[in-house]
Length: 303
Length: 264
Image (cartoon, rainbow over all chains, first blue to last red; front, side, top):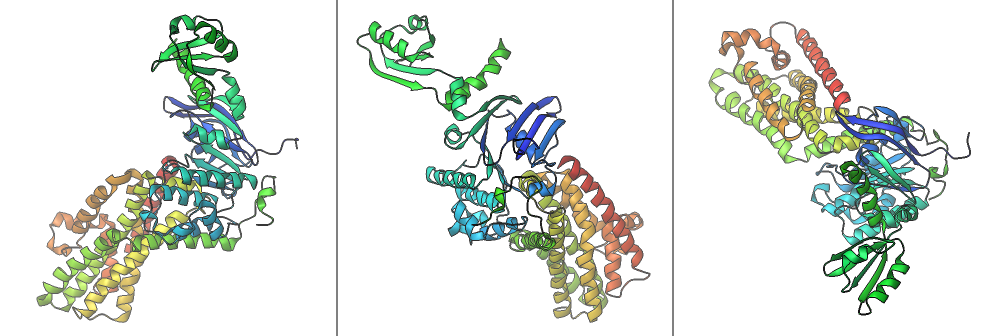
């Protein structure tokens, strides 16, 4: 045995092709115990394929996929996971409580029904027919189904789509509680603030490859840019020629500058235009970093 | 909660699933499958209404002059007609829809025990078939006063409940070929013509010679022979027909299972 504990889930150099299209092109992914990993990437980047491989829904053409060191198609491995997929039409005529009891029956040591309902905030829905729920309520029920088996690993594919802000905050709290219990989570999401708020580690996929993997801060640091916005008469083209300015443009009547050295550029700006107003300096967030990362390959391709 | 298994970090250390819980999972799946369809009027009504109406019209009202034999003969035929649809539609259409809407994918990702999904649908189709045969039996005994021994009625019920299985296999195969909303149409194209050419609507001797000669190709023909034997109206042994149906079911089950494994 090595010092590092056995990873909970792993893709090793996984390749998946659909005809001429390569969905995954040698992806390595390791998920450790108690870790919340966010899987980000534009549509077609390979997120769903990665999850499909880890769930054993599809087989890699090359490389390996493992759950708890086992083949994901082994039921022993899947008894330790919970799943919430992007789209799954559950039987509309079954009541929420019946769906929960059915799903819990698949697991060796499920949570008590009331506890699952409580965690997902659906205690008041148990007697309702699934088909009569709102979209946000359905997502909460699907979340309850994902956690009802007391899983050690949760797959959540776009879990908060269709939820209002309050429901989303509650789900975030439930996810944090589960992670605190020692549960690992693989989360895919389109909401970068969700990854920013929850994830210990972020993996960015693009065109079937891992573009970046690391903590949220590390990812942000990869794009060490700040954005300066202000109202000024200075000519954007001239400012773009200043040292340390990456880009400058006039957007909606405001001068907008990207730079890695915000302090120096601000000093020069104030010197050059004493009438400058409404100065804002923002650090690049995950959204900028993400845009930067996922833009690069297509630019290189175009060149 | 105390002593949760989450704190155990080694692989293979998950709690084993006791056999009793595995059995419970099969039962829960079957129960849910039955509940969801028996609660769904748009599934149950057509299944019960068409054979019921046809039997009332042709088997009871129009056959009065033909004597009690006709009511019994058509009871067998319309029971077979009624039993085919939960197999073809309950199994085939629901599989086609669930391959399309993500439910089958979710079930495959969840630790549902192997085969529980198909077994659940099979039991649901058998339950629906029993409901249809019981309805027709009630009409035959209550309205037409057909002379039917208790053993004959029981035999017909058993024929229906088991006879739905080859049609489950056929429906399953079509469900693996056609995805989503296209399946009901395709299955109607199988269901209605096959019922007609195997003599379920009109007795075979009334059909053209060619159709009579090729009738043994259709599984519904063989099930009709067994149903007729059950109500005491057949010549010859019923068991060769049962063997044909068993072979038919096995063949389509294998074809469907192979396609499901390859394509999901």
